[in-house]
Image 1 (tube, rainbow, N blue to C red):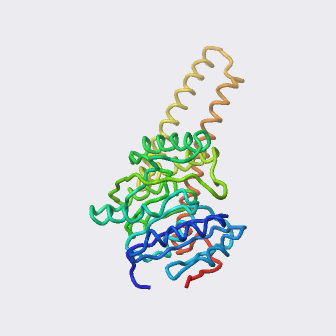
Image 2: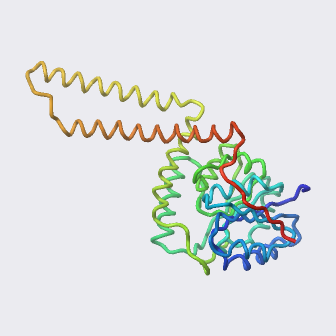
Image 3: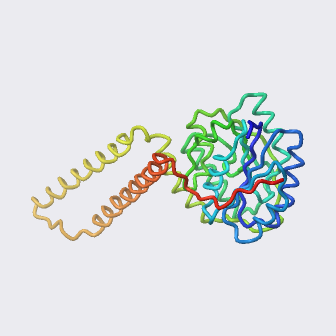
Length: 313
């Protein structure tokens, strides 16, 4: 396939009622642009695949997974198959508006931005279950990673292809795509985009994602700051733990010499177990993540299996 100006990657999961209006909106918005639409079905169990094939045109390819892998993996598959000079990502629930894409693409071209990120200026979501957790997550990510974007939850973004295809998407790191792009040296900006209430289907997200964000944030901070020098992290923590342990042991030795009984202090034992257990869990998680990356990248394996690729006519 010859080089196109734009590849639009849209991930869908059980969105059968949204497919027809989504594709119609995309075809209208991108008229006059050299583009391809890559629709990634993440193991839907409804009629999403049938509807996608029914309303696909010559610009559209449908990647059909053999099972549900998650949004990050679906994005990675779409980006892997993209051939455009710029890659746009967008959710398939019709809350993002494809009519914003030409404006964002033009800004990326005219001002030579590597990433143009959307900001949902008038977000049409519930406050308690969607907006409040999102505000907390945005604040936490901004202040720990020092990548200052207003809206990490908006999936509508335009990337230069070389940035998108070198980010290394694994697990559930789609929330941290701007951080991954920054690690690739991307120059980023933001623009306000439209946001619509969900009409069909149900949201796949809830309050539980806040805890996933916090867990992924620990991993992201490690990759951002210590990937090439892990001894600075583990060595510092190890030495601090060692010397604190020495001080505690000296203190207990003094008490023992003074004739006091130092055995059977449960609060000290509980604290020690919690500290060591927490460090062990975090370390194990990071080591496991590195092993997963090494396994896939060293053998050029993919984290997904595509059952079928359908090309629209």
